[in-house]
Image (cartoon, rainbow, N blue to C red; front, side, top):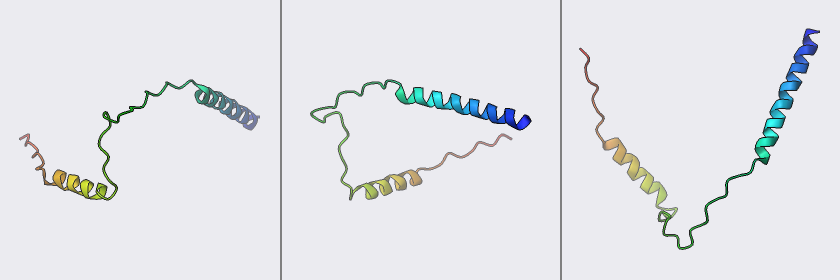
Length: 74
């Protein structure tokens, strides 16, 4: 008896989740903004060969920055 009620409760919860998932999938999406024709609003593209080098330079610059020292609360 107890197992049957547990199974029924599980099926009800599964049905609720299925209904919510279906509603979410069918929800109208916000329209995307129109694409920029001249490309002036986009950031300049970095060639693939320069990306790892540029990332490494950024990481090294961050590592070189001094960390703030914690203040003693004594």
